[in-house]
Each structure stands twice: as structure tokens, then as C-alpha cells.
Length: 365
Image 1 (cartoon, one colour):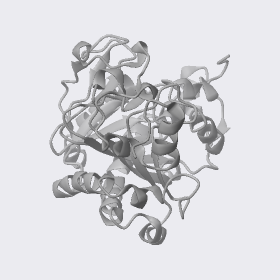
Image 2: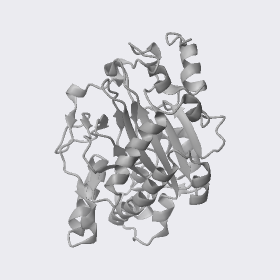
Image 3: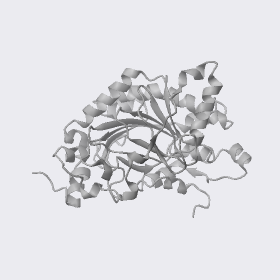
Image 4: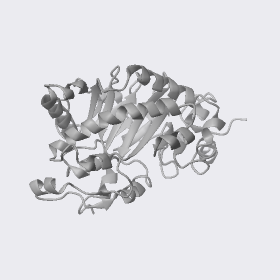
């Protein structure tokens, strides 16, 4: 017998507690969005009012040639303005990108009980978590998303604990992406005065997570969100989109491609990866780089997947604006903190724009 999706308690138990996810609910043949997923009007995404980001992806292969300085300027400008940019010739094989998307679809098509073994509280390993929405216990309206999250500690533990259906392709994605991430950080931190061989760069990406996100078809996308307004808490995020799209970024200052306060879509580009600045990079740069507020729209036509890699400092790392940057700016915008405390704050609350940064802001009362 199908559970009652009109009853919040019954829905929560089926979707969240029992691990059936949004997909399990959709598989029953929904004709309308349950009340628990209907967003307040201010949180809904009006795609008709959003423009598309028209800047060309950045060719990362040119970092190794005579055009290095020009490409570095493009990367820095993107990090200082929107906080999002796309890259190609990034070193991740194109056939691997296609395999990742297929693998994600296949994983979320598995029987619910196979995925539910990894749900919070029962997963056989703290390295793998299967869930839905972001913080369902605290959200006023749930997000239309299921996900599997895999923390990377070392190769041996990943091979032992990550789900066998996605382990190999996810590991290869991480292996082939991390060199690109380091190159990007060398450019961005170098612009702030840090030398490429500085051990701090490696420390900023010591913790890594690979997620697979699944956004099932939705009866009425206008009432829902796949992911609510938020910024990423880490250093840099690498994101593989599929061809459907739905990623929107908020413009913080007037730019060539839009006005402050507008939402702009980052359209899928074949063979490209999306890069975005995280909160840690905004703090280290004393606000020069922007961890942009972004969100994801749902679709009624076809289920969508996205596969991000989150790079994060180790939990014991002390984070603060770089002293020489503060020296130039004359004032520090953020206090020093231990990353584990920031993570506790970030993961203890529902998505709410860039409110997570208030934890580190000086005089943020």
C-alpha cells in the first residue's frame, strides 16, 4: 500500500527515515507536488526572469603555454566577480564524464533497500551517506533531491567502503580532477601572494568529497527547488552537469553579464566542468573572491543528475584571512576559526543563502 504523501509525518518516514527518497515517492506516480515540498514564493525559481551566462569556458590547457598570464587573469576575474566559471581541456577524460552521468542514473535506479543501507545513522561507514534534501529535520520546505556522498580519506578505504556500483568511476573522477584543482588554486592563491610550492595550498584541499545528486522529474517544477539558496563551505568545487541544466547563480555586484541581485543560469556546456569558489576561499582572500549564492531548479521532463567534488581543508585547520592580504586591505573582514567549528555550524542549519559566512564575520551581530 502506498503511504499518504498528504500527511507530513507519513511522507517524512517514507522519504527520509526509511530511505526511499524523492525517487521512491515519484515512482508511485505523483500527479502533484506534496505540500512538504512547496516552497514559499520568494524561494521559487522563475526561469523566465533569469538570463544565461554567456561567457565562454576557460581553456585550462593554455595555463601550460605562452598564454598562461592571460588565462590566469580570466580565472582571477571570474573568482572576483561571479565566483563561478566553466573550464574545458581540464584533464578529465570526456568519456569518463559521460560514464559518470550514466553511473549516477544507474545507481539511483537501484532498489531503495540497496541505497538505504547508507542512510544516516545506519550506514556501515562514516565515509558514505545516502540521503535526501539537505537538512530535512530543519527545513520548512524540503528540497527535491536525493544524493549519495562519499568522503575520500585514502585509496584503500575508498575501495573498501564506497558503493561498488559507483566506486571505480567516482575514484577516477577524483584522481583526474585534483591536479586541475591544484592548478586553479596555484593561480588564485598566487594572485594573493602565495607561492605555488607553499604547503598551505595542499592543506586547503586535504579533505575531499564526491557526491552524486539526483533530481527526479517533478509534477510542477515552479513550486519546488532541487537545492535551495546556499554557498559551498569548502575551498573550490568541481561540478559536472548533465545536458538538462538548472543551475542558477546570484550576481553580487553589477557586471558585464548582469546586474546586482539578478539570478543567472550557468548553462550546460558539452565536455566542460563548472568551477565555483567556496566560503573558505572567500575568507582566505578577505572577501576578494566570492563564494556565490546558487540554487538548482527542478524539471518535469527528465530526471537530472549532477556530480560535484568538494575540496575542503582538514577539520583541524585554522582558517583566517591571509595576513599580507589584510595588511593591504587595512582590515580583516573575518576572524580566525577552526574549520570543524565552521562545518558544525554549516551542516547544523537549513540552506539560507550565504548566512553560513556570518559564523566567521567580524561584527556580524
